[in-house]
Length: 238
Ligand code: APR
Image 1 (cartoon, rainbow, N blue to C red):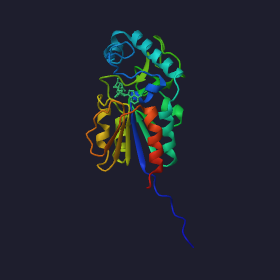
Image 2 (image 1 turned 180 degrees about the vertical axis):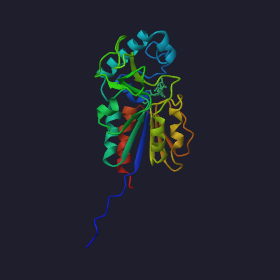
Image 3 (image 1 turned 60 degrees about the vertical axis):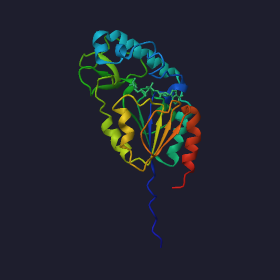
Image 4 (image 1 turned 45 degrees about the vertical axis):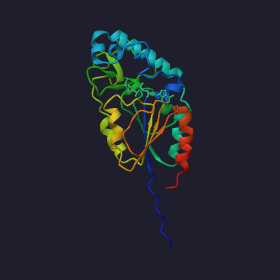
């Protein structure tokens, strides 16, 4: 009698996404041509110094971003990536603080720079709360009585999720780099952890440089480029 064979392990895809992934959902990228993020200098709203100087401005800024995310919908790019799970082990590692990958249906999403839908205690980093889409205001506190802040990694802060991200990239068969200018470290360095023979796709109208021989550039918007790229990957003989 033939022994039942265990299924072959699935090939692994890691998607490294940035702000361009959500551009066609109506969320602005960070490095727009005027160098401002929704009319603010990054240093005024996304650094520990900004928080110390003017927490009210920082909270207002992120409250607006949260409302924007709540009003946005996943685009064809987010939806296409979900289909990859039919055939591959897929991990999305995103620099985005929005929840559009999850709302599209992607199952394994790691947020390097935090989540706009969470708040966290300023006294104890481990106290993180789902804020149910609500604003955070001055005077909103954790159980310890300390002010809540957005659960976002600001410039100058550590990126603890790198510890989980690096091992995922290090065993990837395919890496899709989508909509990131690759200028903010340590996230921008992740692609260099991919194995030498991993196939890398870069989907971005600005074709940021990745310095890898195996990279294929797709100079197109995510919502346009990803559906056919996903079909191509689903058709690959493994
Ligand atoms: N599809 C794909 N890529 C796009 C699209 C689109 N529709 N529109 C713009 N892009 C590309 C741009 O060409 C650019 O290369 O998306 C990239 C966006 O780059 P950034 O604005 O620098 O965003 P990102 O790389 O995600 O920023 C990294 O910096 O501000 C911090 O913490 C914040 O996570 C963010 C980090």
